[in-house]
Image (cartoon, rainbow, N blue to C red; front, side, top):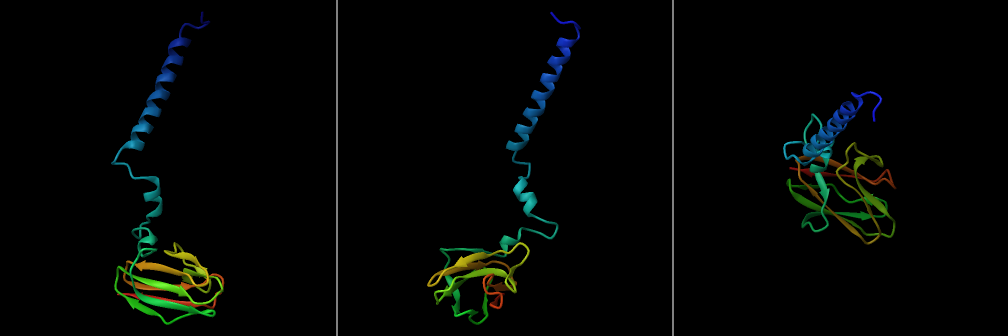
Length: 148
């Protein structure tokens, strides 16, 4: 049957070991106490993910408006934390509503949405501070949302 009589138990032990490892991994994946990979990867030592600062909220109720006319954002606005701002594109050219400066998104930009002519984007700002808003298509376009 086997050339070496110890061969069968060793193969059997290897199979059990692999089965136990697979079972442990499956249980760890289902456990409530294990952090998810996406949660731990998105949080840094500095705190929660950057998306918590603001978010695209299509159904939000804006308390301020920023108009886009030509290749310029309207005036800077000030809102309370948790309030939304509607960005309205009043012309036919496409733009972006991007957290950043000089046409470049900030690291971990909390908003980066395209906005076509005649369209609007609603963004809710959740954390106090200043959010610089730029257009990636037209880097000279710049405004700020001040959140109190």
